[in-house]
Length: 340
Ligand code: SF4
Picture 1: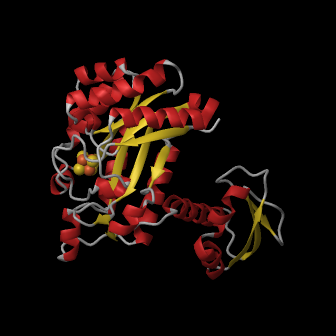
Picture 2: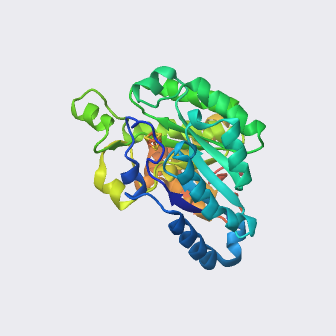
Picture 3: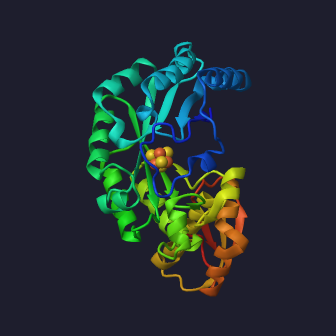
């Protein structure tokens, strides 16, 4: 059964400051605070719509700093959601919050209300980058909160960003290494996008901050995706969701509606090139068989993978084959015996 989330956004609630890049109201497409009644309505409608599939779905509070919001408001949201978990209509509650808003008391409260997954916005493990972007917490607080969450038996999610003001490719790779050491159950990777009404927008307009290009970001995030996949850490989100507000308020930065697919496509090309190199194949004509769902990734946007391989001397034809696993491929030379 496919896993699903019923997402409830609480934009900026609980945030003690404004991070340099953040305009949650545009990112989530929501400007008003969610009320407990709205939570109940949303979940009743979702349970009705999902029917028996809801038994495999989670309730997710996203878009703010859940455990830092005013205590009685936080409890009212949990009280609205908890009966749906108690009655086994949903599997549990997932929240996202700040690393400096986790302690033993809050973990006990979250457990009582059926929270199962806690995601922390780590963003960077470099204190200088965190300071420059007004995150208001340190890398040490990410480490401590992660350990407390795991020790208390919750699933841990960690979110990191690439291309922040003052960060670099090597900085992002170091953040990924430190994030992996914390043994998260999942990660999310968000390239920094410049939204209107943010400090990053001001720095961009004054020429002080230059965002990564889409190509640079795809290359970096493709490498990060591979890094986490090799360690069996699921990357459950890569790039921001498209919302009308995001499209309206985005000033610049490496955003694409199919960002993850671009990264996977780039990774696929690298793996294919490696296969040619490791088999000492210098040129020729080849048939590449891939899972049906991977044909467009294998071909690349505007056939860019096919064109790049052709420029290197490999003429490839991509074929759909239901017997091939997603992300895998079967390479057949049209002049030599099959190799894999
Ligand atoms: S803590 Fe999260 S929601 Fe709050 S301003 Fe920073 S990025 Fe935005």
